[in-house]
Length: 413
Image 1: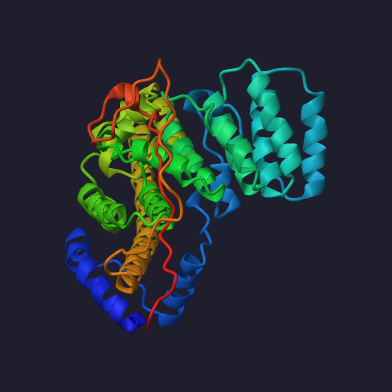
Image 2 (image 1 turned 135 degrees about the vertical axis):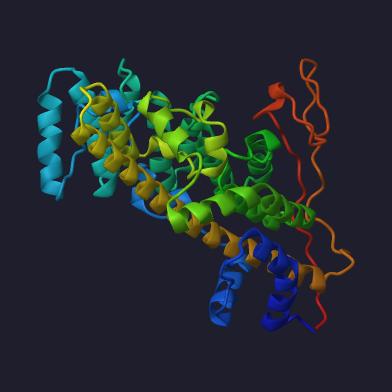
C-alpha cells in the first residue's frame, strides 16, 4: 500500500521535530492542513516549480529603494509614482535632462517604478541605458542583477542568465545572482548546470552569505533528478549551519536587542557597505542589512549630527536615531524568520516526497532514463572529481553530469 498523508507527516516529524525544537525553542510551524499538504505535494509530483522568493512579488524584484552609497544617494529622493500616466510624464522629463548624477539616479528610480507598473519594456530600456553609462552612483552589478530579474519574470531565462553572469564575483550581489542563475537553469530543465551553481553556493566558506532559499533550490533540484541522498544531506547542513543564526534572529525579533547592533551601526556610520566589511555581524544579523535604505538614512543622520557641536539636544536626537535603528533591525529579523518558516515548510515537504518515492521503490530497482554522459575531453583542462574540498580557483567552475530520474514500469499497490 502507499503511505497516506498522516503516515508521511508522522515519519516527517520524527526526522525534523527534535532538531527543529533545538533550533527554535518556540517551534516553527509545520504543515498542519492535509489539504494544503496534498496540494503542494501534488504540485511537486507533477513537476511544477514554485517561484523563487525574489520573483514572488515585484517589491523584491525591485530590491527597491536601496541605494549603493549612503552619502551620495542621500542627496536624492526616491520617486513615488502613483499612475502609469505619471510614469510617462517622468519619462519625458528625465529624457530631456542633461547628463548629471541626478539624471542617473532618477533613471534608476524610474526603472524600478516601471517594473512596479508592469512596463517591462520601458524598465529594460532604462536599465540597459544605465549599463552603458559611465557613472559610479549605481553599481553596474546591481543593474545587471535587476536586468536578470526582469527577464526572469518575463520567462526569458537564458537572457536572465546572460545578465546574472555579468555580476562580478567580488560583488555582494554575486551570491544572489548565482542563486537566481541556478533557478533559471532549473526552469530551463538543465539540472546539471543548476547543480554546478548550487554546489558553489553551498560551500562552507559561503554559509553566512547564502539565505535559506538556496537550500530549497538545491533540494528542489535534487528531487527533480532523484538525488535523494543529497536531499537529506542538505537538510542536515541547513540545520547545522543555520542554527546559530536563527537563534540570534529570534532573540532580536523578540527583544530588539543584539550585542552586535552597536558595531553594525558604527560600521554604517563610517560608510561600510559590503559583505567583506561585516564579519561577525553578517553571520547573526538580518541578511545584507547594510543595503537597507532606512538604515542608511539613519546612519547618515547620525554621522551628520556627530559632526556638529555637542549639545544635550543633539545627544538625545542621536539616542532616538539609535532606537530607530534597533527597531528597524527588529522588523527585518521578523521578516527574515518568516522566510525561514516558509522555506522549512518546503524542505519538509520535499523530504516527505522522497520518503514516499522510496517506499514505492525501496530497492531502487528502477533504471535511470538516460546513461551518464562523460565530461568533454580537453587537453588544456584538468578534470577532478568533486570531493567537497574547496579550492579558490574552483569557485563557480564546477561542472556536473547527471542521470535523470528512474522510472518504474509498474508499481504494485
